[in-house]
Each structure stands twice: as C-alpha cells, then as structure tokens.
Length: 328
Image (cartoon, rainbow, N blue to C red; front, side):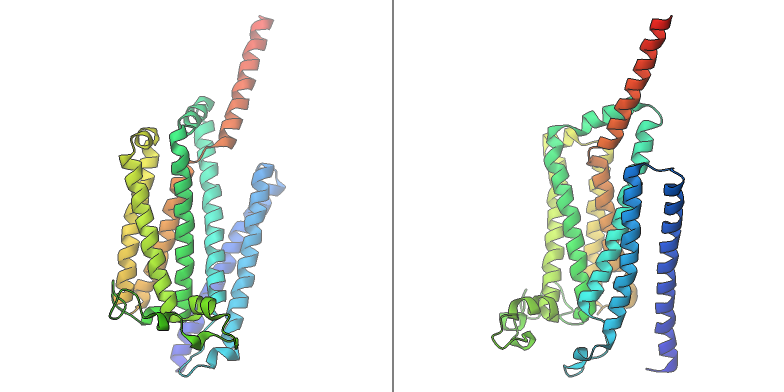
C-alpha cells in the first residue's frame, strides 16, 4: 500500500468516526434538553433514553470491530489480507440499522399523533375505527414479517461484505455450472476447527464465502417473493383491498417498487464484481427498503396512544359542556 492509498482510507475512516460522533451528539444533547424541560411524555423520555443507549453501544461496537483487524488468526489462510471480523462488521451494521429504525419509528409516531390530535380528536377516533377492521390484522402481521426479512437479508449482506464473498460466482441466476454450488463446496471441511467437525455446519454458514453468498441470494429472493406475495394479497383480497387506507395502499406499492430496484442493484453489484459505487448504492437500497417497510407499518398499525389521548380529550370537552349547561 502506498502512502497516498493509506491517506485515502485513513481520511475515509476519520470522516466516518467524526460523522458518528456528530450524529450521537446531535441526538443525545437535544433529547436530554427536552427530557429535562419536561417537553416530552414519560414514555417518549424512556424511548429517547433507549435510543441514546443504542447510539453509545453502536460506538462501542465500532471500536470492537476495528480492533479485530489486527487479529493474527485472520492471516492463517494463504493469500489472506487484513480485514475486520465479519461477525463484528455485521454487528456494527445491525446496530446502525436498529438505531435508525428506532429513530424513524418514533419520529413517525410523533408526527402521526400530532396529525391526528391537533386538528380534531374525532379524526383520531375515526382512523382508529378504520384500522381496527379485523381484515387488516393478518396484513399487519405480514408487514412485520417483511420488516424482519429485510433486516435479516441486510445482515447476511454484512457477512458477504466482511468475507468479500461478492468477488466469487459473479453471474446470475447460476453459480458456476448450476443454480447452487456443489455440496462439498458449500460444506467444506476446511472451515471446521474442531477435530470431530461438530462446528462444520455453522462455520460454513458464517465463514465460507461460497455458502454465505448462496445464503444471501436465497434470502434476497425469498424476501422479494414474500413482498410480491403481500403486494398481490393487498390487491387481490377483496376484504383487505376495501379495508386498506389510501396511504396503506401507497405504502405497500412503495415497498414493492423499492424491492424491485434493490434486486436489480444486487444483481448489478454481483455481475460487475462489486464496484464500490454499486456496492454502496446496494447497501443504501437495503436501508431504503427497510425505511419503506417501517413507513408502511406506521400507516397500518393501530395508533393506540393517539386514540387514548383523543378519547380523553373528547371526554374533557364533553365534561366542560355538561358543566357549562348545568351552570346556565
């Protein structure tokens, strides 16, 4: 590595760390202010504290991940080069996704409650009635499964990145001569460390680049197929189509469109042997897909907190009217 190449990765890492600290401070300091001044509810104060803790944990995981790049066991195999542990890289990525998802979900909850309560509490009760339709209950569960599948698939992508598994089998839909590599390659005994090979299965699943890429493909195609099935269900099921709100229909359509784009990005990244710009766009696409799933969930979930606040407000207003009539 030349000095200029080292400067390039040094400043990239330095910028990443600086941005992480700015993000943490830009969230934790305002959150502490609003909590100290009593500007948020007790429930929201607990959520803000939880997210602040996740941000601190994310920083710790980042240090733990970078430290793994100096472990000697990463150089045992011929041709190996310095890299961080794929386990720690995936943990760092998962923590980042968790922080982002928590911020987004709570932000959407606040916006929805304000939208429902500020104009007229009756609007909140009407929307709660529409979302209470029994036909939407299975659809909400399916949306939750979409979010989980997207997250798991993204984490398997972290393993692919950590092992440089995208640099092999750069064709689609086949992997070599078939749609799956030979079983002897998927479950190679070279990755087992115990004499009895009792760790053969899970080490190949998490440390064998061929198996990791194959798993990521299967998860990605399964997630895409599930999203397409849920989209079709939202359109072809008469009860769900009638019960789903306009925003809900737009939400599932957005998830479907971003899923198509993400699959195309994944195939392009693989076929062109993982150029940095395509790989980064593909990773951003996974976050965009998770975002769309969370937005959809916020549109079909029951706003219980907003409904409870609206009902209490209406009861207060009704009590004042009754009290005023009695005085008159």
